[in-house]
Image (cartoon, rainbow, N blue to C red; front, side, top):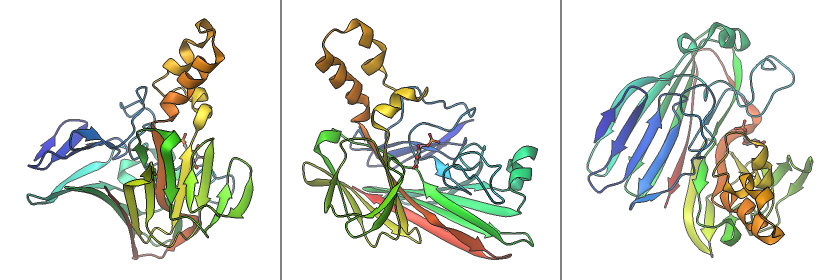
Length: 302
Ligand code: BG6
């Protein structure tokens, strides 16, 4: 099924799976399979278009992080794609086992300031494809102008997980990464990477499938086409500094709670529900000549 509302679209399959996407940022905010939500969405996320959404799958384009130099220095952190209202291009395919919707973004959807910050003529087509046990997101980038441009692209996917303490991430061993927490570079040694403190790493040229495991059982298997890099992020207690991060019970009552242990458990609880595994092309610029097209996609299999 396909339902289009003023600010969002909802896709569903006859077998019950569903996905919900806001026109704001073309942000996927929900993916339900077997009655279970697969994506983390902050309780305090802003969904009215005034801020990027804290949760779901915000789109990062044309720059990853906060650029400090070069032609993109004026752009906000992670670019403008997650801030813009996208055009609904419509449902492009539907069968009993899969359904796809496409969204478009071009300079005409940007504010005058954004067009000045990134003065290129471009066209993005973003496709979200829901199948019974997977969710695929695909971006097509076209250079429709006369000037060559460079870009990054990333699907900033917030995965909902049962408990961070039992979680490991597999498929990164042997890959070079930049750690933004310690400002260092290293080669990953862990076959199964645990998430037990703040993690913010950009793994470059990850060769194959990345698996997210709960007690050793794969709960998400992430494959990528043309997206060579993977970012692993969990803000840990840094989330307390984020105004749009919730549930917040962990810290709002803290002063009233005498036992340090109880406060600590409550602080860690909200963070325990998510890990961001972000498929992207971010460790280097991708250059697109006039009249050229680039396409990248990722599929999350359960
Ligand atoms: C991650 C970055 O992809 O996004 C982090 O690696 C960043 O450094 C995080 O903190 C969230 O960014 P934002 O802009 O949504 O708060």
